[in-house]
Image (cartoon, rainbow over all chains, first blue to last red):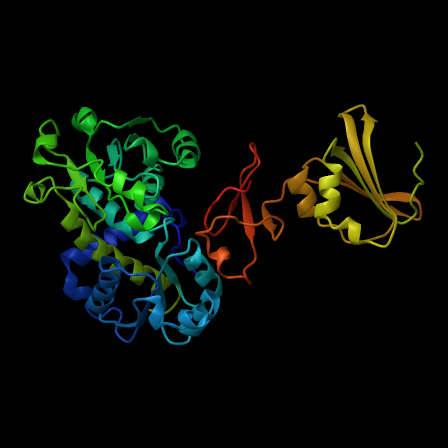
Length: 307
Length: 138
């Protein structure tokens, strides 16, 4: 059974297929309005999420399907001690596809190993968040026309930022990528990502703490939030949370065609004054996320023989 | 030093010197009733020094454990005092319940029934990662 647990589960050709479908949905929404009529998406969200859960729900409704599920673990059988494996087997009897968010890393993989329907990882702790990466990829594709020969700056929490790790992995498969890593020393990209993704594929990268110095080089600036929930120690969070705040002043030397992305939610790392700048793409990114989730649901249901 | 030849059993040969005891423990050889000999620091033309384990019984041996601890080890199967099969053990691609994930954020930390599965991700540097959370094995 095909699932999406890690963005690398899909080849670049499959990613392109999803982008093509998403673009077609954007162009011809009415054509897709009944594609999932009679189908059910189970949203199993063991930790709070607004954007991702609503995006999945909106995606399924716009395909004409239905949604069932829970939005926190206390309202599920997990509170009674049911295992992820048993929940996946049970939900397979009710739904056609699962979207799961879980605070523990690897939980959606466990679900996929036990479910008889496709499972989509909607975020597993600080590990993977492949549908956010799909949203990021469609945004980049629509803003830049492709993925080749891009200089991409990642700024903020590069240590715990799962969206950063997934996007770097996804972009590493395209030619001409250059990566600029901007973070406080304590939140640097983990060495295994540098070694096993960037160095292994001979992708040039630089690490810096100075956002303004590298701004003129960037085609894409991917901002991230310092996530309180990833810290065991509140003091460390408070010390690091305001490390980078993007303001109009800091964009002075940025390119005219820079695209600013952010997986959201933002706290204060992008000033609201940037929202009206044409280079701000993060709300478009939210919209594109829904279209990519629609494309993904269609692909996985088709491959499972349920469409 | 003389160790009796075995008639039916297994000889684990070409163990890197110093790894014999670790293998003994991980293979659970201390629990066997049969004769088990660990010979340390045996002269070896190829390795300089090596360890050897002789097990005087035809028992199933966890080859993945051996391949993980010391790839390159040889397993000799002895029947009626004769060598009937010799195989060289390479690093296994997958390890199941041989090593355990210590990442407190991993799903294995809360779901006790789950197998701990590690995949070989870098053969040259002998790096295994948890299939669930990708944490590197120590």
